[in-house]
Length: 308
Image (cartoon, rainbow, N blue to C red; front, side, top):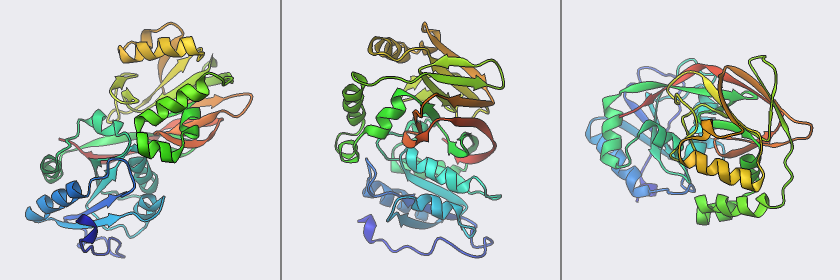
């Protein structure tokens, strides 16, 4: 089993030449879809090609961010085995570093929209081949109150669901836990109006707002043009979020026509503020994140991410 494999220290006070060719795999063994056999297979393929591979299974929440932020991070390639939340944690740790490793993803987790966005392989051999080929693209990201997001930051109904879904239900039912929670709170909630200011222009009003760095939202559904490897952000604003409007918008999203739906606006921006008369729940990359107001902007930096 992979958990019995011996690992060597992943932090060093000197970043050269020890980092040359060093591959660090960080995995959350409690994440949905965790697959120890796949980790072992990727490790074996990389070592067979001559790579030095260190494997670290996290033991507490936030450990990926701690390791990535450490000044002695010693790795040429950092592989995150987890979902979108684990990738977000890595970006949070890397955002202030001058030198960052190439980032790679082994798709685990309840959802991995970024893997879908980038067309990443799922098989161990194909993942290892992608890492060995060293083909990268710039992974751009946004900042919500200085917290990185690679997919989206939003305020409104979806964030309320993210805040409310029980962790044990999420682990047992995965995506269906969000559906059950959405139905439970959707019939009784009272929405708070949002004010959205984009690049200093006249404010726009709505009940739901999502700043998107990626094309996809909630899975394979396209929410805006561009993508995570393209610079710039887009804001989707929905005028209403009552049950009937939510159904109508959901159908438009599934049909790839959300930007054309009545009462929906999609607009490119560089800086935005989402505010409200009362605090409204917010989320980043599918995890709970405080409440409004949100100050959102495109990050000046990018991270090299390995792609097929």
